[in-house]
Image (cartoon, rainbow, N blue to C red; front, side, top):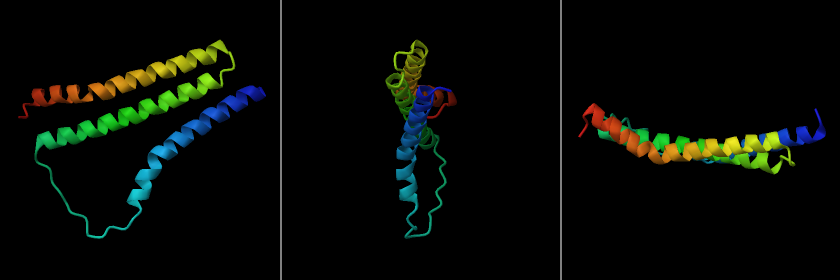
Length: 121
């Protein structure tokens, strides 16, 4: 393996690790605090509430995944050094990010269609 290739792989790995750390660390820090009150058990019987919460989770997950692909594509493009195959890989990552963002935007519409199929008011 050439030193340039090793540097490229190290840069992509470091960028992906940093993105994951930045995405996951705030949630871990917030959940590390001890609870002041005992946890309240909440049962959801409303389908609209379940679908709206599902919509939030799906949109967040797709946006985070698309952002990760966007960062990986940017890192690949910056470290390509004129290599056409690396530039094509970067373009493919950018396309995957665009698809992810489009699905995140379309998630409310898809879940509303699911809600109408299931017959929820």
